Length: 175
Length: 202
Image (cartoon, rainbow over all chains, first blue to last red; front, side, top):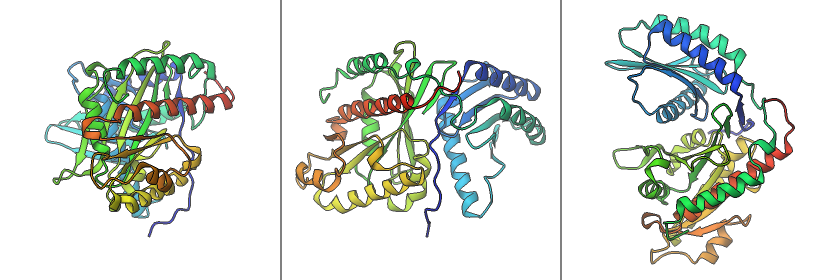
């Protein structure tokens, strides 16, 4: 029987332009070194933070990130049920042509590497580990890096959003 | 909430919660079928062979550029069946707003209440409660002959006087009205939160 014995803070993450550029550079370096299909940094809610993909990449990154975040969250619960002290260090999906390697960066972010089955997993793990160390120092800590209210959800924004929703949904009789 | 300031994107997560077969997936399917293709991504559904949601459904909605910012609403459903308790908790991670889809059939009133209490339990784990969190109620399946009167459902489920809507999700009745109010509540709450937060850095 599950017992509720812990509380978690809600995660409000803010990523600045400088952090985004630095993260993108790290992902580019990793993708170049490994020659992989795609490298993505994703947050625990499944939002793509940054990505470096080959020009032939025609996958919907939003959906890939969402599914991966859920898969990773499920693995975390499995680890907890099995009395592991922390989440599994990595999750690997092995396909006939492509593999997907997922590794935690910190509590709020994880790294996805999509690579062809010919690329050695050991190489992916080695370089991903180095990149993760670099990313940890760049990424915002939980709750850090807020922005002033007047730059985001000011009253003008709320009003304009309301008008836009009215426009977008106007053809539906129930509204 | 996730703010990708470099891209001026604001991501907000809305979860459709409710007992099994109350119509959570039907809401997303209707939205997906009617919304402008330019404003939506693909609808992802993870279901069993019996067509029941096993993990979640997912749909990302955009409403274009608003004052230089791009709000994106990530809509999820949870599996309603009782034994998927842990799965519901996973989907609720980092949620910004909840649409509770109640089944209006008289015989489902206990299931509605049990599921609402289940939701409260999960919210408490992440430091929230139904009293201080943005959520709305949708009374779905209003077209069925055994539908409980709305006044009764209000008494049984709407303890906190949150906005509520009558719906017949497969036909679209009440679907967009519910979603619009949910978005309004989430943005209003985000505004209030940021107003109370001190500026740290940009």
